Length: 406
Image (cartoon, rainbow, N blue to C red; front, side):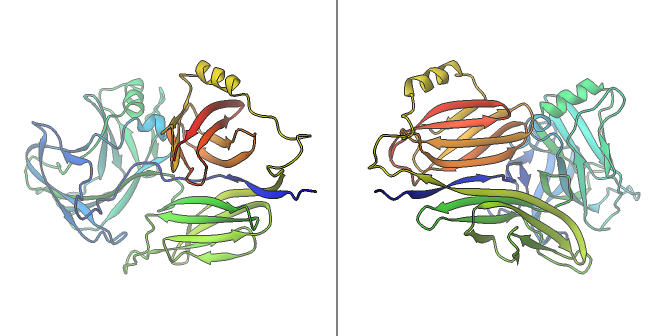
């Protein structure tokens, strides 16, 4: 008689921080992919300052020079309407010098596609040295009756139609900021945390990774908060975070990554609550589930054993779907493989890696936004050989061959 070994099938719905974010915190290169615009509009000096009173971090300082002054990022914010529809574009703003305007100023940010520009103008106003403000602009399409707006401001495109606006938003090639306020070349403004993320008010993004131990039958998760605002100032209390693990236990978030173990199979709702002082800013939840399944060992009779996978059939399907919405990069792979997706709409994508005996050796699921996104799989524990990657989204299933080469 043979004993049955145990393995775990994991299904994790992740909230990944894949969206672009410019926090200007790199001491070696604070500007990141931002630069003065090409001639003749790059008339701006830039430097780094610290701290931003909202989060205690480093920020970028823009000084106006004579002529049009633009600071541009043509790398990180492409096709934001296609990739991040329904999310928000956040930015922090501070006005140090207004060029002699002596009047309230509305913070602004600009999206470009080719030579077309759309503008988000915040409702809030600032004056010289009045303090930092945080603005969020909705990433959405215009309609025949209105340009997108929210309680914090409105998008506009003077002289452009609503279809022109949508073309810029969906096919954006760059993001722009500017110190220009008056014709006097003496303005100075600060920008920080130019990030695309959920509009729900959470100031940080959350990531959940899962792993399992086939010997003990336990599952473990690692939860990381990206860009937490932990710094407190008299006027801006820092955020505190509490993680409810869904099994009757909870933990305060005080380190970069929290780990938690589950010994019983089941479905768990893991919720992260952010508070500033006594005020609850938001609560965001994930669903984590796993089940223990019996698997026959290698030395067993062939009765009722899962049949071998038909490689020829998979190869035929793969060839037929050469231009499909999923790519495996790299392939052959060693320690990891990225599932590159291009979804028409937001949805859950489930991925299984299956060995040649038909055994599922790795599973992962993610809630992804529309457009181009990645699902990263850790393959360092897989032995060298051929595998099948099965990808499900909605009612569609796609199978592709993956080669692990050590």
